[in-house]
Image (cartoon, rainbow, N blue to C red; front, side, top):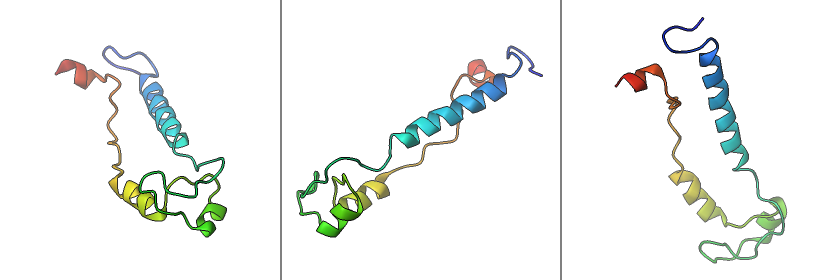
Length: 89
């Protein structure tokens, strides 16, 4: 049951769209594929053989990956698809 200007099932559609967006974003951060680099793509330090064997397609050294992961910020859980509240402000 929807109220106001929203159609029936609008909340469910927004939830499904948010989940689909997040899944698409997560799939974009998959593990690397292809041939591993011998030197880091960012700092140009050598990547150890054990890391290249353990993670096929690796492009970054452990230090650069750790730095990148530390800089990653979680996205807010706010649904920005045009809720009634945001339209009234």
